[in-house]
Image 1 (cartoon, rainbow, N blue to C red):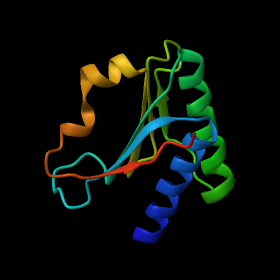
Image 2: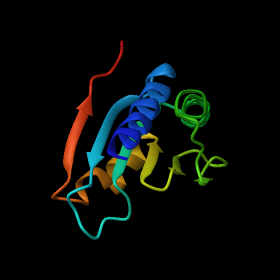
Image 3: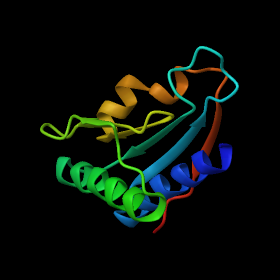
Image 4: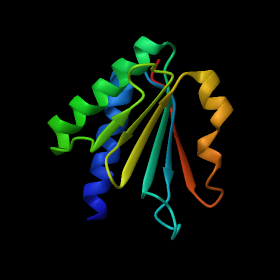
Length: 120
């Protein structure tokens, strides 16, 4: 089952990179007993339009690569913070100022954080 989750995380990262998502971080929460999911994938977009494009790209890539679709998506209307719930993986796509304010990658001090290099 872990392989399937890693494939989902890889597909999410690919979808984010396809639309030039910035500062991608994968937070591995598998070692934390009370975590709401197994992984957070966090990313920044430069504008509300890019945040929307990133979310659509993640959805499309996950459907194509691993036959997965989010159970819920919220925040697409305002597009300063979009959350996509894939059950064991939750994707957060922020405008930079909102990402700094909420700083969710540091809410889980015990999480293993992996920074994905920006594609330039």
